[in-house]
Length: 174
Image (cartoon, rainbow, N blue to C red; front, side, top):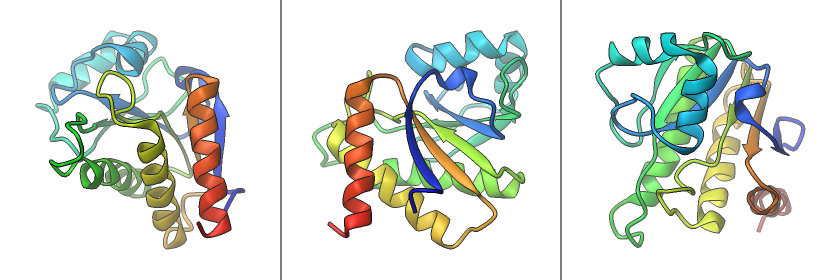
């Protein structure tokens, strides 16, 4: 699985892939963190297209062009805000990853890069989030050979280490 799921540290706005995923808010109109960085790098055309989408529910996804980004598409998904794990946050996070991959498949994307969804200002615990992400991605890829590679593009070394550990655990059958 490691040839199809990769973990790197880097800037998601600089990745030359078919689609990058934006950890968006429900308005899809930009915000802080990775969302703000993607909107700044893509240019004002991205915001203009996002205005036509009329938002997005947590756990779902919508796709736009990449505009000034090296990526052809941006797939926007609002992740869940962590509230202690009692409000379906785990299921909603898994749904984010699945919804993005379904849109990627439907739009002919062979390479998809994700940030760590919901682990910034939404405070989803990194260990739990990384395990959900890796297991959901691996499960989807098992039945979808059209997607050749998915990368987790981690903002910092700490985040990268959690995703590497989650991938190692999956491969070891833990």
